[in-house]
Each structure stands twice: as structure tokens, then as C-alpha cells.
Image (tube, rainbow, N blue to C red; front, side, top):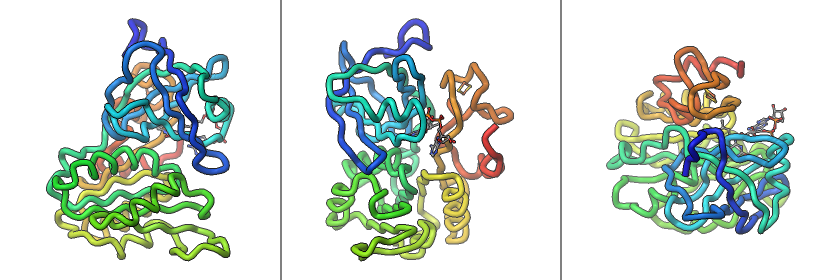
Length: 275
Ligand SMILES: Cc1cc2nc3c(=O)[nH]c(=O)nc-3n(C[C@H](O)[C@H](O)[C@H](O)COP(=O)(O)OP(=O)(O)OC[C@H]3O[C@@H](n4cnc5c(N)ncnc54)[C@H](O)[C@@H]3O)c2cc1C
Ligand code: FES
């Protein structure tokens, strides 16, 4: 779907808006012309709120199954404008960009999918195809956490995943409400409860950087190899195709070489703050 000028977005119409939490929605987008573009789980698009700006947003759905799904939290001008769109509105989108979750490489292994907060959006894009081809993997465990029960995106769907016999789901929150009956604590604290064989496990992790750092250390401590721990990194972006340098960290362009990296490659970058 890329136009001749790689900076020019294509037009997409909002098919529907689903509310996930107080500040987070999922947009279902279809191109105003043609069919939705193919993408790989973990990739992202640049979404353009006209007159305001453009931001990277991961795919949260399955490729080839209807509209593009993007789950967005309102944190600043562009994400707020995107969160205010309604069915029928038009926005710009270009992509897909970036490296995907290595699902093919993970085939045959136990799969640990670990999400903090809105990190569940890109993790969902890996979980859905893994469940669709369940026989390709060993055990699958989804560990997700949020600050509070109200901050968990995809709540009803998590409930359905919990009832699936071949999927282990562990949910934890930092601060429980009186009605919360689940675990309280940070996401890495659920790793000891996940059923997996470390020597044949692959982990995909997405969430705030501090959560990813501690999760990666906990996975290493549990015996998962650094080359089999994959993290999705967030950095400010402008072009998304490795020309502007906005997301560059030494020889690494997060937009082109990432956002999904093996921990063995980015352990050092993880300790660097945004430039
Ligand atoms: C590869 C990639 C994939 C992404 N996928 C998603 C996604 O699926 N859904 C989504 O909502 N966002 C996603 N983001 C983050 C999103 O691009 C930023 O939140 C966005 O750029 C914010 O732009 P803004 O103009 O709304 O706010 P800004 O003006 O850029 O920021 C406003 C305030 O919010 C803070 N802020 C910025 N980003 C974040 C953040 N991610 N979390 C918490 N605080 C933040 C800033 O420090 C600032 O204080 C992704 C980023 C990358 C690089
Ligand atoms: S966003 Fe321009 S180089 Fe990565």
C-alpha cells in the first residue's frame, strides 16, 4: 500500500471504535480504496491525525482477517486525536514497518507471551496467529499485568482466553480494587507460575521499558537463553524507514531493525534513555 512518496500516507476509514479502558480504544480501519494491507505480527504503521501529527502504532489484530486493528492510548496530542475519531472518520496510515515477532522461529518451542499494560496490543498480534496454529507450539502461556484491573485492555477477551484449555493465562495488577480476586504484583513475579521448559522456550515481551528489563532478567534467571527472549522497543520516530535518524541508537535504527529485537542484541540499548 506504500504510495510513490514514502512519506505520503494512504487514506483509511474508521469502521468501528471499541473502548478498551478509560483512555484506550481500538480502531478498526479499512482503506478507502482496495483491501487492507498485509502485515506481520509485531509490525507497526504510522497513523496520521490530519493537521496534528503522525505516530507509530503497532498492529493488534490478525493479518488478512478484515480491517486493520490498532489499539491506542491517549497520552498526548496525536494519540488523543486518534482516540477521538469516530466510525466514518478518515485518517492517514502508512506501513507496515519494522521487524515482526519471530513466530516461525519459535515453532516447536514453548511460547511465553508477556505483556505490561498496553504492551498486550502487540502481544495479541502474536497470540492470535499462535492460537490459530496451536499445533505448531508446545505450551503457551500469556502473562499480563496492568497498574489496576481497570487498566487492563482486552478484558472480555482475556476472560475467553482463560477458559481455553491449551493456553495458560496469568493476570496480575500493581494495585487491586476491592473486587479484584486475582494476583497482585509486577508481571515478572508471575514467571515462576508459568508452565514452560526453559531450554526450549521462546519469550515475546512488550511493555514499559522498566518492566521489560526486569522481565528479561527474570527469564534469564529462569534459564531462557538471551537469544530466545524478544522485546519490542519503543522510541520516538518520524520517517519509520531509517532515513531521518530520529530513532537511531548507534548503528541501530529501531524503526528498521526493530521494534522487535532479541535481548542478546539490545540489552545495552535498553539501559539508554530516549535521545
Ligand atoms: C514501534 C512502536 C509501536 C507503538 N505502538 C503503540 C500502540 O500500539 N499503541 C499506543 O497507544 N502507542 C504505541 N506506541 C507509542 C506511541 O507512538 C506514542 O504514545 C505516541 O508517539 C505519543 O504521541 P503523542 O503526540 O500522542 O504524545 P507525545 O506528545 O509524544 O507525548 C505526550 C506525553 O506522553 C508521554 N508518552 C509518549 N509515549 C508514551 C507511551 N508510549 N506511554 C506512556 N507515555 C508516553 C510523553 O513522554 C509525554 O509526556 C508505539 C511506539 C512505537 C515506537
Ligand atoms: S524513524 Fe527515522 S530513522 Fe527511524
